Length: 402
Image 1 (cartoon, helix red, strand yellow):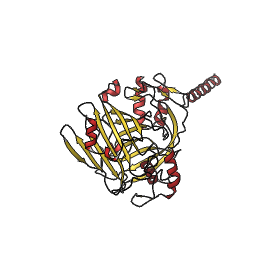
Image 2 (cartoon, one colour):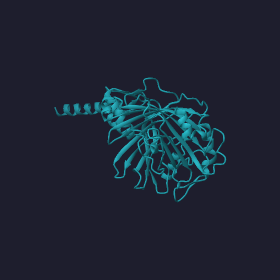
Image 3 (cartoon, one colour):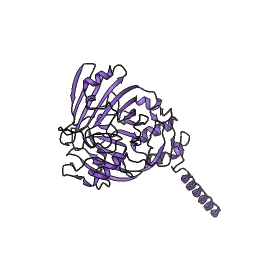
Image 4 (cartoon, one colour):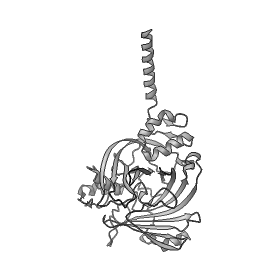
């Protein structure tokens, strides 16, 4: 009797082991409402926090599935790759976090420390040197996390123009007569609904890390131009969960006060890169329906070291295999060290040959205190001829709004 019990126990252990192996997340698996609980522990381990809460909620409600696909091979933009090969070996960092010797491309192909990786993130691959995005935001309240009912939506147009580090669109590698040391100009114009139409913001970022950005905003409701602080741009944008410093995970400028640490690297389950808009319906309540792949990512921590700033630290997840420093997401912590906001990024594949507007990518933002979420999807116009220095004025943007 004892032998029979031991044999049955052994068979049960073998069965459980085989079942556990069958439930391992791998290429070809599709996680859905019916089986997600079998994979939930592994999903939590493999997904970054920015994705897990929203995606697991979507699986629970049957709004989405999570297909696991083969890891993709995404080449760097041709001009960016050439600039990386030409200039990366000449880059150095200074005592106050400065970057020396950078002209264009990725500064450090094999980052040795957190500061070098942070500069890679700051100079990560962009498809072209001037572009615009037509974007759409959906807002969901705490109740919307359960019902999937949308609170409101906003449409906008964003312009983006790099003055230095240019690698594809002439002039290369820098705009002539850039005497102010401008690195980047960015502007956003709200198109609809009517109550926000005409709201604009312009941000001018300088290469000097000790010089705060210039940030201006026009509020049509009061017909006034406001100057905002350029060293802390963390106010949520018109009721959403995305802030200007959190755009595309992190737009925050590196400062002399900051310190950085690579916490390690390992495999994560992340959205694949999209070269085309996914098939409809790709937005399901407050989730995206997309394919997922397993990739090795760096885990990089930013220590802000500024009590006047909204966050005490950030943690971001950075591409490790290819020299682009693509971001897949990140989380932000308040000044008391509490988990606050996250952003998960669905990246677009970098193809500088097509210069079309069919590419797509998006962001999943969440405030984990209020349980409020924002979905942001964007359709870029590569090498947009309208993204000229003249586009970065309130007068020009208001003319477009009309």
